Image (cartoon, rainbow, N blue to C red):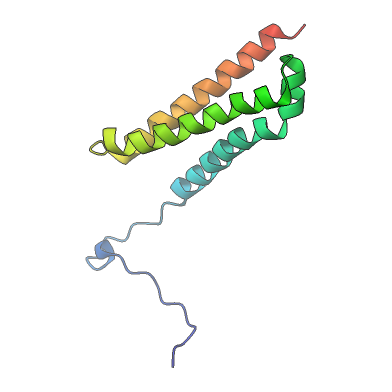
Length: 116
């Protein structure tokens, strides 16, 4: 009969006495990045009507513009695994996070200069 007692996780490096603490900061960073990415993907969909009104488009045209970014995301994600498969994943993730930050700053600066 199985017991419900949790066993401590053993890693190969703990057998030698080189216990390294878990890297929770990496988990928190990935969770934060996932939240920002999902929020930036779903935010335009939730604001479809105001976006269409501001750009003087029909809601269908604004929806198509947003759908194109989804198609681009699919194509990009599929090609990244092929093109960047041999590069260290940590560097790829850091580069993508940097691009996400830069794009957010660019949007913020553009919005700050266009407001009157």
